[in-house]
Length: 189
Image 1 (cartoon, one colour):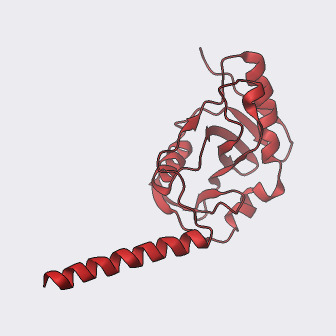
Image 2 (tube, rainbow, N blue to C red):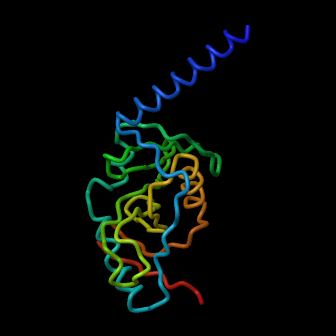
């Protein structure tokens, strides 16, 4: 009996490891178990406004139009969460842009994670050279609300997506894809 149970546990562990390895090989990377948010605003008004003018450049890519993101293949399922009576499902892999995204069926608001390629160390030596930006987008209007040093793992990602959609992160900068205008948010002191 004990030998059979040990064999079943071992087989299950090997199956799970094989599934994880297959998912990793397919580009379904796991993400970081302990992701750290990056502080985007330094408190230096000139540096912060410069950053707010530069960050939206990453949102100009036509591949980030809401309808294109929602039409992406639903590879690498990351899980789902409930918010305001809607179920949001998350997808994505390191090879895609955005690397992670979530939407609800028929919902107009999406949330996604894209590469932050701007080297912010010139504005503040404490910044990291690269990272990942969290964006909430409704139609043509996008808001960058948070940044990370690494891609969060699925558990952390779903919690961060849900918090962003619920408005728990104040926007840093907004961008209108249609008019190409930027909305700079000033944090209260």
